[in-house]
Each structure stands twice: as C-alpha cells, then as structure tokens.
Length: 324
View 1: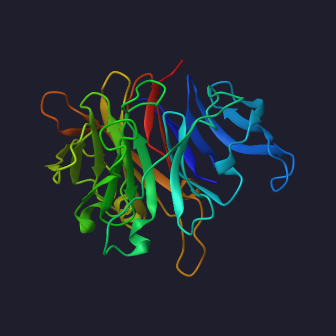
View 2: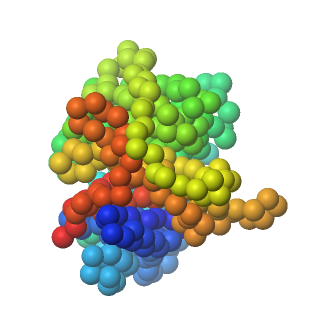
C-alpha cells in the first residue's frame, strides 16, 4: 500500500486527513484500497473483479463491481505510480526475465468495465547505471490517453535518470528518451506535470532548485533547465521548533491548481528511528510548510491560506483540486 494525504489549509485552522491508500483521480479524487478477484488466476481465462474505493468528499466507500481483470495484472505485478486516473506498473510479459512497464486505466472508476485499456511502454534506463538507482519513485502524465493520442509519460527514478515516453507519438518505435539529473540534488525527488507551462518539473531534495523538461521533447534533446528558487516570508518558529524540524526527514512537493497557481509543500516527518523498521511517512508528520508562487516575481512566499483548494500528496503525482 502507498501512503497518501489530503491537505487543506486556512488562516484559522490547519486540517489534515490521511489514509494508507493508493491514490487515483477521476471527476472526484478517489483512494483505492483493495480489489476482490473472482475465479482462479491460473485456470480461468476470463476473470472478473470488484475494486474498492474511498471517496474523501462523501467520506464513504465506493465499489465498482464486475470489472474485467487484464492479463497483465494476473502475475507478478508492482504499481510504481499513477496519474490522471491511470496506473503505471511493472509486470512480466510472455515469460521474459525482465519486467515490462505498462500504463492502464483498470483502477480508474471511469475506465471500461468490460475492456480496460493497457498500453506497454519501452524499457527504461540506460547502460552503466546501477539497478538500485533505476528504482522508480513516481510517474506523471501530460493527460489521460483518452484525452489525447499524443500523450507523454515521465517516470522518475531513485538515481540520476528520468525517462520519458510518447507511446502514440514519434518515439513509439524508438523506445524511451532519458536524461541524467544532478544526483546530489535530485535523488529521490518527485516529478509532476504543469499544464500551464506544458513542462515536467522535479524539485531538489531540499527544495532549493527546480528542473524542467519540455513535455513535447525531441529525440535529440539532451538538456534541461535548472532554476534556483527564492523563498520569502518564512514562518516564525521558536528555536526548539526549528530544532525539531532539523531532526525530521523532509520531502518537497510541487503542485499546480486547476487555475495554474503553483504551490511548493515541505513535508516534515519523523518516520523512523535508528535500527527500527520504517513506518508510513504520514504517521510521523510534524509540520507542513506551504509556499505560494508569486505570479510576477516567481518567488515562493510562505502562506497558511490556500483558499478553496485541497492538495493531495502521496507516492503518486501530487495534485490539487477545488473543494466542492
């Protein structure tokens, strides 16, 4: 399971709700927390399934029943990311030793029940990169494949590699395009897509830098743009509060609202103790710091008011929606 979080801030209060669910989005954001398969995985050709969701708006369970289970989900399968209601996963194909990357709308509440779509992606990575540095941290897409045939997928890795795919575009037969980032700054960072700028972005671990990639990349494109971020109006904290944050693990998330307003969130958590097993990040949360990007100067200004917005953070692509 993946940890996920729903964050809403106002001047008068800070509200935090979290669940250890996988997160997907459709008309309303849904949290997927399980599925029930009917039949024998080894013997039955056609299998049906029920998918269980949690609707955070209605605070109630939603079940999509009698959905066909794609062949790719029957064997060894690992979800590595999700975006626009589509899941990115690794699975073995035709007895091959290496796993193949796919995207699918199987988990989307709006996807076809009788014939969920599954699209294969080309192999990721590049030579001379250790396997542990090719572990995937998350994925982002420009849009759903239902919205545009020429969509792009970005898959970010634990090490210096970020991979891009355009399954319906000019790279559909030539494999993925990959770039190397600055390992010391962008290791373990997340990738997100900006509809406003038509670019993919990743932040550095500490949040000091922002690197962008053109979503409509060319095959011979080998570079990226790096921007140093400036922060103003830092929160007023006591020395003991700053010392507590210094002892925490920090993750940095960039998110864009439907109107194009951009926020950067610093998530501080004491998620483990030396010698003990890691726990879910959200359980040890100590503080969030939210910075709003100023439209004219592009500086990041600390805020405790994000208006009528909800920000969703997790192991997927961060996203932001208006409160209904």
